[in-house]
Image 1 (cartoon, rainbow, N blue to C red):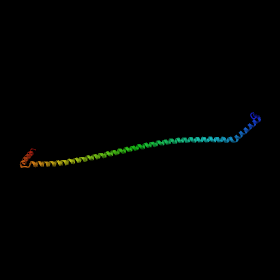
Image 2 (cartoon, helix red, strand yellow; image 1 turned 180 degrees about the vertical axis):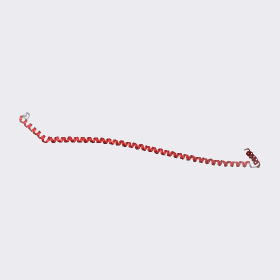
Image 3 (cartoon, rainbow, N blue to C red; image 1 turned 30 degrees about the horizontal axis):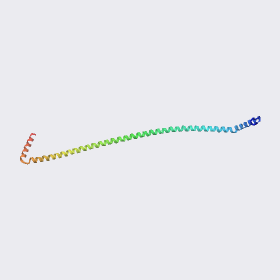
Image 4 (cartoon, rainbow, N blue to C red; image 1 turned 90 degrees about the horizontal axis):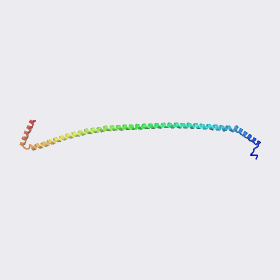
Length: 164
């Protein structure tokens, strides 16, 4: 039972060996352990700083990316507006050219129709004249087939001429 209740000699040697152990640890182990802890602390601080810098750089790159995307969208919209304006202009020019061409064709057709109409009227007048002459000739031949009718007709013509 001496182990449970220590006496003064055992207590003295335990305190002495603990003090020696503390001295040895302080002399040889404590400084390197503290140095390693300080280095580890500095390493963690550096890594945190580099992580923070990387995060800031990523945010900056993201913002720059967004800016570039907005510019690209704006350029695309501008190109689409320009293309639409060009298309509208080309369509309008084509419509104007087609209208002018159609007006020219219509005017030419009208002139041609008028010329054809005039030619037809002239031809019709000529035909009517020929038919009138032929009819008059046939009527005169029939009417003037004998000499008494010819004499009466001459008298009538002379009377008509003197009246006019």
